[in-house]
Image (cartoon, rainbow, N blue to C red):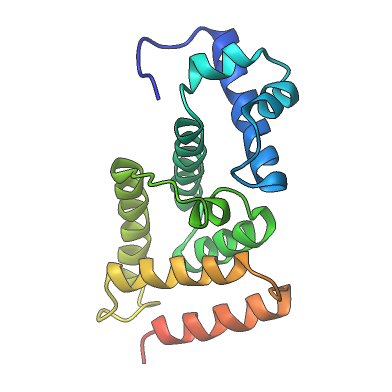
Amino acid sequence: MVEGPPLRADAQRNRARILDAAEAVFAEFGTRASTEEVARRAGVAIGTVFRHFPSKDDLLAAIMKRLLAQLVEEAGRHDLFAFFTHTVAQAAAKKTAVDLLAGSGVDIRLPDALAHLEEAVGRLLEQAQAAGAVADSVRLPEVMALLASVCQGALHGGWNEQLQARTLAVIFSGLKCD
């Protein structure tokens, strides 16, 4: 993705429309979907898409980066247990970027975005431990692995609200202090 000076308001709106359309198109057709279809649904010319995202990989990376930024924002609104519940529900409902990137063969590395998410979840873990809701022996790598695993499970068939609730109850029970 091309970084540069701040975008004008109309360019920001176009970028957001492109990302929204791309999420929908890729969720519907997979990573083989055309950028022309993304442009059509966004209501912009194909050149506008490529001006913002020079390649399809850049577009996919931007979708992931936006998703991770949304998760960081959500972490600021919830405690650890509510964040887990919300994130898993979103993963089950959206099935977008994470699912399609898993099978896309695209190597997208977003260390800064992932670091921000880890920091946010780390703060939630510290707060939960300070409140006595999570055992002091629980560490951030385990929490991140649990979150990633349960979200991955939510992306695949057979996931429903009852299974989500039971799975989260098991995880929450394991995190709590004895």
